[in-house]
Length: 90
Image 1 (cartoon, rainbow, N blue to C red):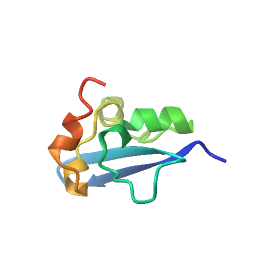
Image 2 (cartoon, rainbow, N blue to C red):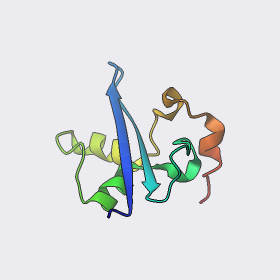
Image 3 (cartoon, rainbow, N blue to C red):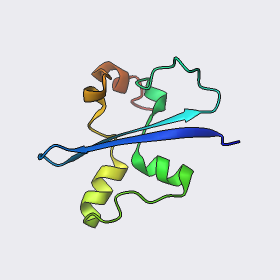
C-alpha cells in the first residue's frame, strides 16, 4: 500500500505555466482540505517522493522555476493567502 498520494495541477493560460502541488498521507481524512499548509508542496518534493521527472521537456531554467518554487496557482484553486503563510518558516 502506498504511503500517500499526490496531485500536481498545471495550466498555461497564455501568461506562462502556473502550478500547484499537494501531497497527502495515506491517513488523510477524505474531507481534509487540500489548502492546508502542510499539504502544499513543491513539484520537486512530489518528484522526489514518486521517483518521477515532470516538466523535463521545458527549458532547464523554466523547469527549475516551476519545480522548486512554492507554486502560483493555489489561489485559483480556492486556497487563500493565509493558508500559505501558516507554512512559512517550517
